[in-house]
Length: 555
Image 1 (cartoon, rainbow, N blue to C red):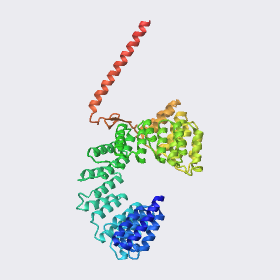
Image 2 (image 1 turned 120 degrees about the vertical axis):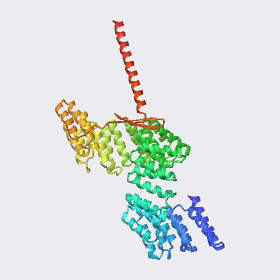
Image 3 (image 1 turned 180 degrees about the vertical axis):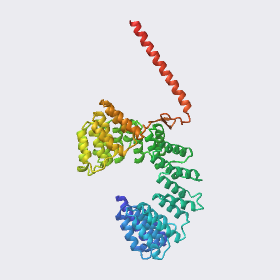
């Protein structure tokens, strides 16, 4: 920082000298260089002071560069104050401050300034509309977006491809997909404008319409990495993970280098499917591209390995990370808890605290889950109480759910019910499901009935809830009640949902369901299963025969 400060002072002196001896445009080059060296508010103020002294503060071009530098460092308020002191800003300067405020935490100011352009006797151009519409998207201000759309028609820019793209993005982000599509279809010269097509595909993804998103994607004459990423992320978000992986593999085969977002989406899909083979391929790809230093990708790799059952690899990635975020620690704690390694998860939490990393609300979901797996009731109570007292985190319904699950598993059913009754939230299906499962373990039919009555309202077609209560009655010898639950299932049309199976073969994940014959290799799979079944029966027969002969010989 000392070197940087002296370098900045030297640059200011050089700029002052150049202003006296050189052409104005030459000094502008050095001003741009000076602005690039600014890294804090003091630097910005010093540079601004020099600009005022040398008269640069009234030049729209130089002032625009200064405002841009302010906003890039996060000094949005300072940038706005500088703009307000300009006597006659041009549309270029208006665009710069609108762009800056659109990226700020309070983007409403961008809309206010946009509305002042015409009042100042100026005309918004093809940059003004996209910049202000970015603020509209951040605020989800649909009606304001419609008003700006009307202004684009009034200025004759409603058929400009950049303006239309921004409007499509706005309507798509606000889930007005029909309005977005009408604009998209109304632009005759849309072929080759990838950003416009991406905006429309993203709009469909936003509303979960992957059919239309995929249809547009396949019609695109030109695609970029964003096009592929939008679709991959879209499939992953609605748990169509096989499709997400398929698109990712196709992307790589077409020699499109995936960006970080595409890799994160693909790793998420691998984690949900347990596709560790493909996940390892992506890991190798990340290392080849030199992206292994990015914290989000390493976090995604830890999550993928943990959910795919390879905690050794997850720990290897974790240990090789030089910088760790709260998400890194939380993902490791959750992974260890998922595999029943509760003690190791608690040790990891202690290391996290010693590192000075403050846990967040998701960390406590992971740590309470770890306590539940190990059965550490007292420690779980302590964590739950200290969330607010020590860390200032208000428990949410998920934390109450974890605590009720911990108490229920350990047999503290009365305490679990009391906590449920004092909870300042509406109970959800997960909480009642924990109590129903616990009532099955400890044979509490009364609690089971209570839990099922609530679950019927929340999940009327979940067959597992009815089956669990029926099993509770059966274990207690209450056969009439058990049959009654089964009859209720049949009368209201609840069908037992079949389970899915997944298997990864040659980096491709195959799904199977009981009784399903739709797989393209069904006949071959069935032949192999029949052969395996015959071999198992033959082996079992031979073993039984050997045992029989052994008994005869010993006799």
